[in-house]
Image (cartoon, rainbow, N blue to C red; front, side):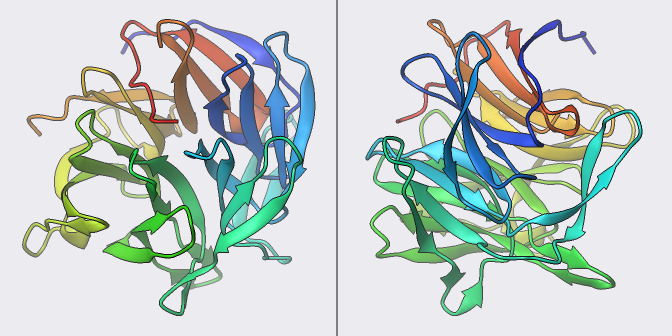
Length: 297
């Protein structure tokens, strides 16, 4: 596996995830530990855009130039002597779990969805827009004690008029992304270290594989270098799926056919990969060998 040579854009962040490359060249990230959405300028300077509470996780820019945040409701935290931080179980102060909209200009926070047909959103994790006014997002679920609330893959509209459970259940569903033609949605599972794909056949509707495929997904691939846990993902212009990997930190790249925490592409040529090293509170930038897929917004 080739080594990634990265440069630190900034540090001192409180478990950053969900990088979004903004039009002015700055990068917005969430801080899961603090409950903040933070803007990181090209020179590394940080400023708080909004406090959303809970545990803001995935984030994306919507068609209205607002930020949409997957809020997992929060974790408890384990602090290591070397400065490393990691989440552990559902927060004692578990709250604000759902999909939130953040006004970039004012910092106003609005809860858009906190349930689907009466079923709570336990731990929304990652989000991607489809260019048609809607978005796909994963729910990681929540684990506490001996109990696990199972998550799913959802679809919703930005105007608050529709939310659908598209695929259930995912075992700790995490990253989500779309193929360049918008006809396939991908999702990762953290604890299984697997990447799944579904053909999109309608608004929030997926074609499903027969049992025993979990949630009807087509298996794309899994970790190739020992025990790994999968996190967020981003898609290259050519269609490759780049999955951020936990345990042995790195990025696993899968070709769609045949069968760190977060990653986002930016820069003038879309060949800069911004990667969050959450445990140490860093946002880093890597020169990527291929162009990332330009997102709709």
